[in-house]
Length: 499
Image (cartoon, rainbow, N blue to C red):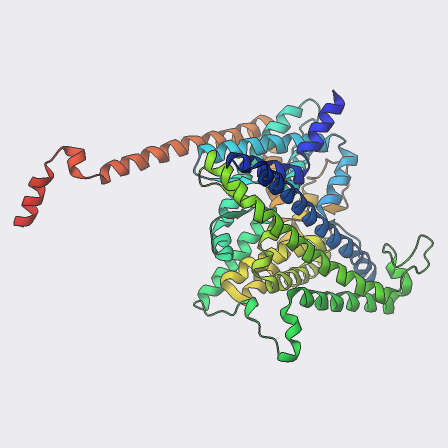
């Protein structure tokens, strides 16, 4: 029995398989041939794994940068990283992964039901960030006082319903900006940086309005003829990251010698040099650029198969449904904004680090992965109407926000209770929403929290019925008078002619 439960958890908890199943169902509903179903399903799974492989390349590159940066400045503090935070929570709450999986399953089922019965037709398909967010929600409820054994089902139901609300409304909030970026209304944004993207998009639109639409897009940057190679976004990213890595590595080596590379693959287990730091920095910069290219390849494969497949599902069950997908889906629309947004967000993270240090708050070091994915996406959103300045200012503000999310969690002891000390932190803006059920539970009790989220779900369904009735009433009032009152249309026409 335990093996079967582990099988189910592994099978349905693997994002690539989950996305593949969605694609397969969509293709079957469209009555595609066996070959088309098999090919489409496999391409989606492979594409998602390629995307994950690209993310791993990025993470491996960034993991060789963070220790050098920390050792250079000699500052210790929380480093926002979702995977590391989940790993530390697992040490404190051994059941947290199981509970988080339960929260995610309830959330996904409720999300689909709400998409069917309401006019909010968003289905959240970004499995990995959904899982992290579900684990975070479960941990917040445990930190608020719920018992992970006695209140197991209460945590799963409360967390699942709360997450379902989030999965419906965060894509809705960002759909305006997705339409601006993609020039269509086919896909939605399903990522835990949603609040940040909304703010960045709003800032970009504001800058565009102030300049009356006369903005210069990041993609309109004209390079001198001798620098035409920079038109290739991957080359531009490579050069930028080489410069970025070398500046930090050279400064670090000049200040502290080889010891500054402790924690990286520059040194072996004995502390001796295994790779020359200068060459190593260049290779890591290229690795970063390769990761970006691999991610984009995976995104294209997934979208080319998943969007048509999802249309089959939405046409059958969720009319006019929209798939909420990972943030990387927008990278191809403005590659220059991706790089500009990342750099702006990272600079904000450095400034935020010194603010936390000076204010006597828990020190938060820049989590480079979070600044890349959120900053890049925020840059694309803000660029759509705000141009270059939007792509700078929007992600910069967003970068400050994600610096202070871990501060709030640490101050409110929202990770795993008073006995735990978490040295990392959640890295995305939307994790701040987990503090809502935490504070309600902590101050008003678990039943109040459950009642609030349940009432919200019921309210959505009731509101939809009211909306439908109002719509029908308006349609009836707008109907021709002959249908409503039985007046002879020929008589009405005769009177009008006389007038």
